[in-house]
Length: 483
Image 1: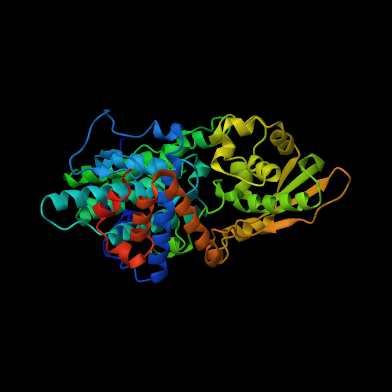
Image 2: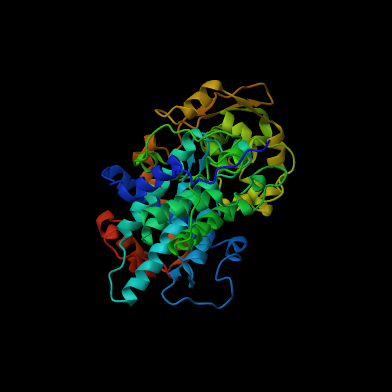
C-alpha cells in the first residue's frame, strides 16, 4: 500500500503571524520602554567603540572587497567605513558584541538583545541617506529606538520558555529572527512579505553553540551575532523582491523546525509581545563578563577590599565556595586550561580570581599577559561551584529575575570570612537608579577612547537628551560618530 502526501499549502504558523502583527501594529506607549531604549542605545554604541581598540576585532571589519565604498551606504561608528547595509550590519553587530559588555537577557534561553542594533542601525542609516539623496526625509532616531524595543521583545519573549542551548543551538537564532522582523518593517515589507521573511529566518541553517563551550570555546562567539543580524538584513531584502516564504516552517511534519531542531517540541510562551523585555533588560555596567557571573564578580570585589583591609592577600586563601544558580554551572563552571580570551570570559572561576587578586576586571584582563599570572590558576583550583536551588528558582521567577551568587572564603589559618551574597547586579532593573549614572560614565569613557574632545562634546550634546536624540535624523547622528 502507499499513502500520498498532501500538497495543499498549509496555514501560516501562528508564531510567525504573532511576530509580524506585533511588529507592524503594536504601539509602544510605556515611557519606561522608550527611556530604557535610549540608555541601551548609548551603552551599546559605547561597547562597540571600546571593541575598536582590539585588533582581533578590527581585522574583521570593513567591506568584503577592500576599498569598496557604497554611495549612500551605512556608516560604521568609530570608523571611516561606508558599506552596504548587510556588511554594515555585520560590522556594527560585531563591534557591539566583541567584548561581551552589552546588555543581556536571561531566561530559559539567554542572549544579548542589543545585538539586533547592528541590523537596525545599518538599515536605518542606509535608508536615510538614500531618502535624503532623493529629496525625501530621513528616518529619525526614534525609529531606531522603536526597532530596538521590538527586537528586544521578540528575542526576549521567545527566550522566556524556550531553551535553544539545550538542543545545541546558539541563541543568535533569536537575533536573526528578531532582526529580520524589525528590519523588514523598516524597509517597507507588506504583511505577507514580512511573514515570508521571518519564515526564511527560521528555515535558515542555525548556528551551533560549539564555539561557546569547552573544549572549543573561541572567538566566533564574538562575531556570531554580527553574522546573524547581517543575515537578517539579507533575508529581509530577499523577501522584498517577492521571494516566497514557507508558512509551516516550524510545524511541518519531519521537515519543520520543531521536528528537525527542537526535538519535536513546539515553542511555549509566557506572555504576549509588548515592551516588557526592554523595560527589564540587564545592563553590563561594571564588568565585561558573562552575565551569570556579574554578581560573583561584585562579591569578589568586596572580598578583595576585606582582604586588603585585614592585611591579607589571595595567598592566604585555602578554599572558595561559589554558591550559584544552575545556568551558571551549566555555562561557565570550567576546570582545566583556558586557551584564549573567549575561553576566559566564560569561566566563572577566572572572573572571580582576577578581581580577588587585582581588585578589578576589565576586558584587558582576559588577554594572555594577565592570564599567565600563576595566582589565577591557583585560585581557580581552590574554587568549587555548588547549586543553590533557591537561587535557581529566583533566576526563573518573572517577579524577581535574580542572578544571585555568593562567595564563601576559607583562609589557611582556618578563618572563614563572612559569606558575601549579591542577588541583583548593578545593571538589573531593580538597581536602575544606582546603575544609570554609572552607565553614562561608561559611555563617556568609551567615547573618549576614539574621539577628540570637541567631537565627544558634539556626540554628548546630541545623544544625552532623549527628546533631542529621538528627533535627530539617523544619518546626521551617524555622521557624528565617524572618526
